[in-house]
Length: 183
Image (cartoon, rainbow, N blue to C red; front, side, top):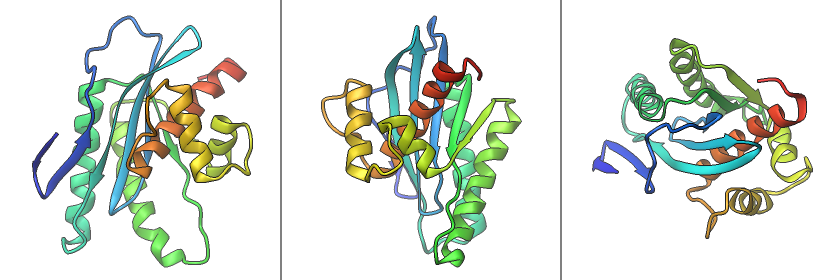
């Protein structure tokens, strides 16, 4: 749903009511410009797609306003979908640490919104998500997106990329529980 340009949250058809699901998991791929999110339900080791989207902030807005916008949107998503737990990708520092700082700030406000509601938070490295979704840390982005599509029984790969990555984080959290028996 999109209400105005500065309030850009794209979603697909959604099931916002929580039925008798065993677990509802919110996956998030943090970013300052684009934060992906995805919701899956897990019942008896079967994953079901619920919804996904992306929160976009404008580059010409002050950073504090962009972070506040992300915080408010994540709170809104939590309120709507009522997840039992959440999964967030851990920041990977490459060669450009400066560009990682805004992502870390985004991750901070996301973590605060999740903590405010006492939702257990799983944190995964990119390689852990690749392994949790594809079975291999060497999987590329297209392989991960295709496996997300297959696992969730979707007709096409979820887009944009950040939302597909967020669904991958949620799938990884579900797989962790199935493997370890721990939340």
